[in-house]
Length: 242
Image (cartoon, rainbow, N blue to C red; front, side):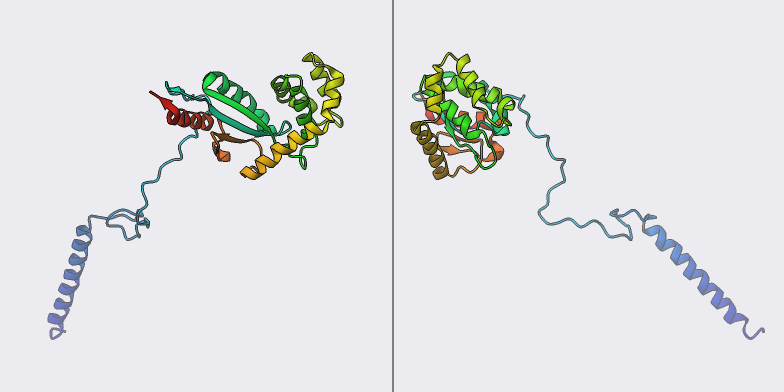
């Protein structure tokens, strides 16, 4: 036994040295924990693609209540805003009061033009409404009929026959009823509506409402009160005179 004692002592010492070294190494690593992504962790950090910026929460979309003031400039000619619309189209009905407000705000710096684009495949009464507006034009009451058709869209859009309702609007406007009903069925009114549709199709119109500002077509997502004001303001600045 005495012969092996020195070897036993050496082995014990070696074990002690190894144990002390392990403890020292662990302390040198700063006592790192296992939280992912932290320096010294034995978990891999999250991968970040090159060129990626810091993540941000999506900004709130602009609201129609923010308002965009028109520039204080003089122009030699008004900006032309053209709408291709369908009187039975719900988005057109929602845009209608906004356009009226914008027209009021810009006054003689803006001219609004309406073109018929009835979507007859999905709106059964859109063509009849367009006919009513054109028949009223023949008695110089286009815009008055235009306004009534949009304001009362829910009243006539689902009727099997909206013509009596349109005739009642004509009566309220003081139109000659016999002429009005005759004009609704006339070839001239039909040709006027067809010409608007053909013009819109040639310009790339496929849906309603589609708005052009000085012949520049707005994207669908820009056809909002803010988008309209921005487009009008940009054109006013282009046309500004000293």
